[in-house]
Length: 383
Image 1 (cartoon, rainbow, N blue to C red):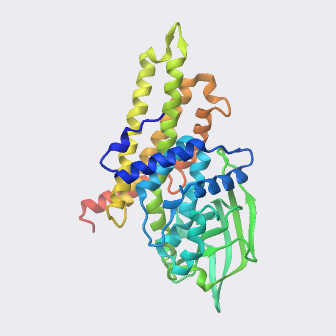
Image 2 (image 1 turned 45 degrees about the vertical axis):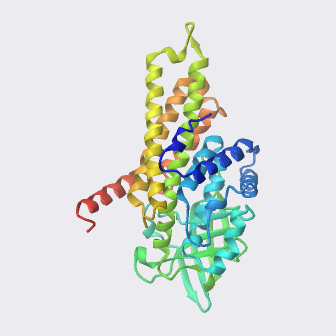
Image 3 (image 1 turned 120 degrees about the vertical axis):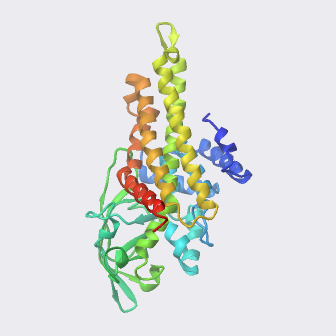
């Protein structure tokens, strides 16, 4: 059993502790065959929805309980990385609708995604633009009562299986960031095509999407014209800390596996744990995990306490938690020796799962730029 003492930190209320226990019970009971990744994701979304775990992923009043989101991702990631992915995408994919959608848009999609009856996706990245979102080139051209979409999106999580996409395209109100808008897109539209399914080191549903003269009604726009960049960044501002929480869940599982190994494995008649070098590794892992947890739940609490943005806090949490989780898992692999690189063992799976978290929703290097800029801005009095 992973450490639960952090739940008594002052960041949490009784409702969060009850929530963590509920998610723990649900996660512990999940039994899903991962042979077919698409089918597994569909099954996980349905199971999490039926159990009420998807509740915090959206809301009609535009509010999120970020601590609940982080707790759910940490716990699910500790049990099953694909379950964490399934949960996270239900929130990220509809975040724009929760924060900026009309009442009709919310009513059409949020109850379905929370119930696990519809799968959502966030279509932002393009072949020629990843971290530089403002360089996106996909266009949405007004034509009467419609917008006509042309261009490609790639590395889209849930691409190919999603029922609804929050998609970002250039409507050209202004150059770069100010010329983007957001739309609700469904895969039944003429001109919508899944052109490639992408394979990664940790299997998840990923795809490249192409839009060729794909018409969406003007009512599908989320927010106002030209607000797309603001909408995308607002969604990421909420969910970036949850990526850190998923990394924390992976790290906790790695520590649990390592403790089991070093206390049961014997070298020259004594447990592996008796070696001081091994104790040093365990100590480093424990410190990194607690430090990451403090940064994550500080960011989540700050947002829940009313801060409009947590750009600096979330960036710090994501940078530290994902980078250090990589180190924690690497140490666990080392402590397992040859068994640590045997395909399908828990620590080998974690080693593949963690790597992408240092890239998506802002790579580690990008987080450093954000932190530096926010720190300089604060030193100048917010100018």
